[in-house]
Length: 129
Image (cartoon, rainbow, N blue to C red; front, side):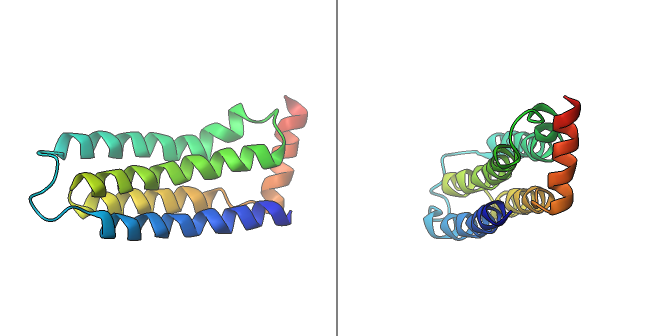
């Protein structure tokens, strides 16, 4: 149970690092790639879907996989949401989009906490599959 907790904590820190990198790598005002409003809306919508997939989809479609495999999938999907925010920051979008996606990624990551209860629920789903 210690390995999933270590991975969970390390990947949780990466969300914060993506936010910091987004601030540092952000182009100067007016140097963005034109109008990124549509890209911002699209990536935020995709981020919501990916966060839901992390929280609800992986437990369903990865129920035949080992617990660690399912957890890594959940962590990676939650982290992808924050990477969408980093992408928008680097394109010069308003930072509100980056903050929203980072918060969504962190919430999905917290929802994927690898507790003993979660492991037992996974094993029950795995046994029923």
